[in-house]
Image 1 (cartoon, rainbow, N blue to C red):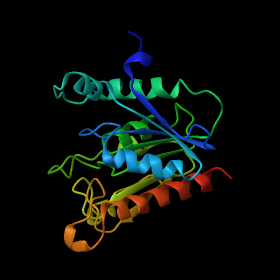
Image 2 (tube, rainbow, N blue to C red):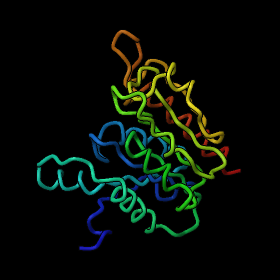
Image 3 (cartoon, rainbow, N blue to C red):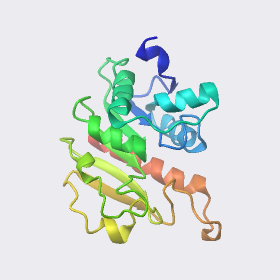
Image 4 (tube, helix red, strand yellow):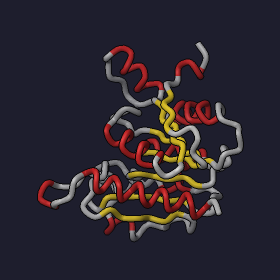
Length: 211
């Protein structure tokens, strides 16, 4: 079976002026509420969004048996395979949630992306603040974006402000959001409000980079 057949793809707004290839995180696939909301909201902003399942998640969807995520080379190969299906010259952006954002940043140069975008970057594993993943952030894009909740246990403001970040990476904080940009009930915000704030930042970046 070919790679193209094994990679499930969902395409929103094929006529969009810009293209975002959007990779999911470790614990949910392309059909999660978060992935769907972000993709559909971006589609309303003249942006085409390509969602896909990494192989381990597709196997879970097919069999009902949970599996650990693929290793990074396999994740990269999958995103690369998805990108290879589109060669029309449309401005390309790579985006991911958590684990998917690591893949997006690592492939940005190879795939000639205009920017890499993280929705909740896992700066370190939970409980291991010294095990940093900053090397994943290095690429030659003009401007990259990380959108991070202030309650994110994979990298909180008091930690991230001390990191030696690449000059081409901007961090936008979503007040009260956790790693999935979910608020607390007592905050008075809905998750859709925080997700929309993230979408607005992504849309702003895309349209500022492609002038």
